[in-house]
Length: 230
Image (tube, rainbow, N blue to C red; front, side, top):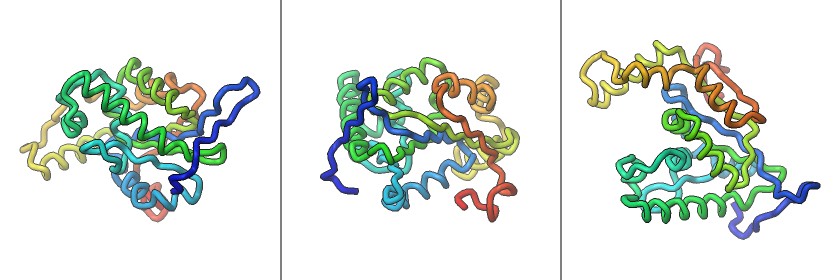
């Protein structure tokens, strides 16, 4: 990516700044999100050659990197200094939070400055799904999207059979050693918030009514060559 490229401002007939078309993968957990993000991260430069920008996120120590855009999700919910993302970046006070937010916006705007009207931005994080469960959360996200001059044209959601999802989640916890038995780590309400796909889809469609909502089934039997990335 050429760091010397300058921000191009495109004007419409109404003399408004043109926003860059953006695909938003809200990444339901246990539905291929990590595989998708790993592929995108490893092929970031190749994607840019095709006109698709996958911006790097803010990671530990105010650096850029990572394989998803989870900080954008974290900044869209009420500030809590115990949140893992803020703990990792040593964001402990409201002052720290404001400085961190400024750094985040500056770093993203700098990366997005290379976009032209022929390019597309791609954002992905399962945290959009797991963190942003209320209308107010989505309204905060919209503010950041507007400030970054992005235009959400497509929201991609992979859904998975709820029983299979829960089995996969519990198995992961057992492997990690954080759960010792086959029991649900969620309350009924948490399960509803996470696995009521119709409500999730409606929430996002309401927040971004002009965007296409692409709902896809996470099932290896329907993937080309039984492979998600293919």
